[in-house]
Length: 130
Image (cartoon, rainbow, N blue to C red; front, side, top):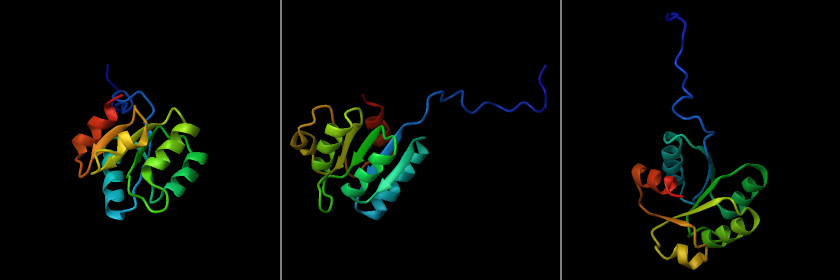
């Protein structure tokens, strides 16, 4: 007995609350493209262009994943990641960089590496690890 007013429940496919991802990237086009990909994958996205702005967001918002470039103005992405790990130890760290040594340079053993340029598939893959 189906009623004509029944609407499919869109929450069935994704019963969990979407993760909040903080993207730190000083190149506006890369920041925008990354945010669009994350949005398409169903994440809640917070976008900033510097480590200092990222710290402001972390003070105010629940963040699950930090996705950071390494070569940022003022404070580097590796320095930011170390601060985040010290102050918010549950935040997952992902380095988005062409520099493959970012993870080892940071000293954060469980950090993930996403090589630039990256695709929607590689972004989804690295975020589903761990």
